[in-house]
Image 1 (tube, one colour):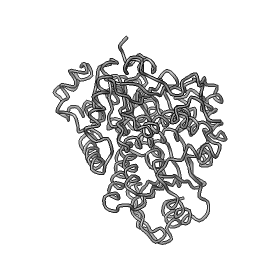
Image 2 (cartoon, chains in turn yellow, cyan):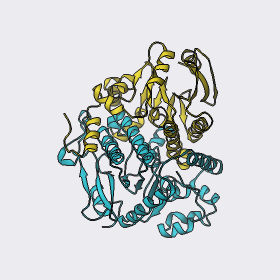
Image 3 (cartoon, rainbow over the protein chains, first blue to last red):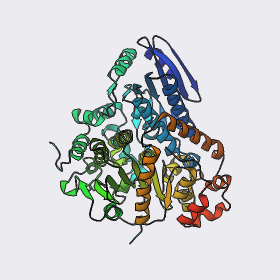
Image 4 (cartoon, rainbow over the protein chains, first blue to last red):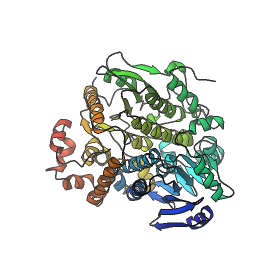
Length: 238
Length: 299
């Protein structure tokens, strides 16, 4: 879904979101109150500039609009794969964006992420995944890496990875697998405006993803391991 | 043997912290291995490639973790990530004096793709929770596999990063960039270029690492002790002011170096007298030379 159509469905009360070189920012009305909206479109590769632009917007929101809820719209092909970005330290720009979202949360802003098209790890991990909770549209895809590069790194043949990506929950790019693993809180398929209002109502500062993964059966070990380490027990609760 | 680079994760823990003080949580005897590796016929490890626990550093109690590059490049799977997240959450619960992370990782473990990605994200948030609770987190990067992908982001969420010249810190590995964008974009076999771009010296000059040390365990130990003290003095928690300062620095970095084709050009722009000589310099001599030329540091 293109971002204009998405915004029309999300914000029947109106919005003032603008696009500049695949960077989305602005405000919108949700349940009678203003929210801040930031994100990307056109499967944007996240390079140093767009990561910094998103961070600037988040910091501006914290400074100028204390407490205003923030919606992060995700559509990205992942981090920009260029020598220049690595030379400039793109991991630091990504970390900075993540820290800015984290600061907003601690400063009293509710933050919701929405994967409305495509998400690849490097472009997603410091934006939508840093939200209080992240949601997805049914047609969204979420991947860690393109299969050719993945084949080169893992030494697993690309044909085998393609096969696995068709069905195996650990490799398949559909949002259902991420929901089962707790990485996606829920998939929105009906009234997007109502879903968004509910998401802001439900948003909380605690990271519940490993607990969700256990409840939903998609990640059976993450939560027991975390609990064992926190409790200092060397036995996993069964 | 004194080379940090060549030691295993457990050897680093044994030698970097006070002698005999490391106590492991969920040790290999608990046999918590990856539930996902079997389907790719990949071997498992009973610690899933990371050791976490408590130790004394110069007499001070800390929590610590060490990633084992010898197991799947130290990459983060479901269990591996949960051990790091559990450690950081425990740090908050028991108000630990500090957390020291010995990082060596390719990032998300691709064999557990989706679970690994969520796991890295949980580590990030747990680390920032620890900082918000006033607990300094220090990352050491000096293993032969470097610190890449999601762990490259995690490192830069810490209060301080300590690197050796041999350490590498970045997001996408050269092979990934070469596969996606071609060998003319980044030749992964040009080792000198890889080190100039991702190695400790360049990161130090850019302000992404706070101390550069020789490849010796004792040097990392001393730098970790200093980094914890320095982090306490600088303010452990993130604030709007510190992040606005970081925003300005990162913006200046693009303005000054965005047009550079090679790190050597950036070093010249920083005013280093003989950039071509930098790769051959010893860490201490380099630190002395770099003083006054580095960009302001990270938050």
